[in-house]
Length: 376
Image (tube, rainbow, N blue to C red; front, side, top):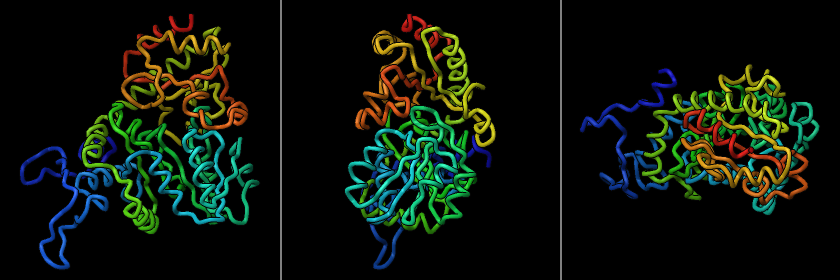
């Protein structure tokens, strides 16, 4: 079954009612037909028919085992960290979503894990950061918000040589444009709130393991901690997935147009978008992805202009999330990375002049017109 068909049908066949969409089952608990017998569902914290359908689809789209659907992206990452024990060490690409860094610094370290951030996460630099107690590599590609592109195949091969897990956040590109598991990753992470849902109306997160063994370990943690996605939110994500390919194509086409336009503006110092030929990640992106996505960042000439732009946009929403139908602009230093020490942000290029743009589905000319008046 091809990707677009899988997004719409997902292996679901109409039930006895003839319903062409997967039904919404809201029940929290299920009756047993007898002692030691079950319908396959007992308690919604463990599984629910609507969530199960969603997990099968997401797992198939990524080419892994069944996904695990969580109440948010951060809930998924928190569950993932429970695979490790006190004394374990993880290496991560330094340019990560600020909420992930906050989790590592405030909760994971408290629980006995240690971390090393690699600013330029080439396989060689990652290898130098390994320690005898290293257990996993945690990556984002493209990264948030500097749009670094990491070599998934080479880094995964490095991890296999050292018997490490490779954990990859694929939120920005989705499985439509990038599949980390075939490249060698062990677990894929998603904030389903973003492109998978696609409409800014649901919080969700996903883990997609590559093997049954990893799925079994994660499901034990999952049912124990109880951070599962609700049936209604599962149904919303299923609905959003039906248009994922169409949306991603439009997001990416408009983002490339806007990135090229921004490159020519005198008020803009630099544009960060893998689809630009001037991008350091352009060649690698062409090799390991089938598209460049709808996210870009850009640095304007002054802090005053950055703040003025945020107040002057009219069509574009000054908001923190991404991946929805609406175009949204974010000030990473004070929003997504507010809990990351400023010196760390500045080291990465997250400064007072940097803005991140999630390109929506509006007509690209309207988006450009809004940026034009806001930059003036």
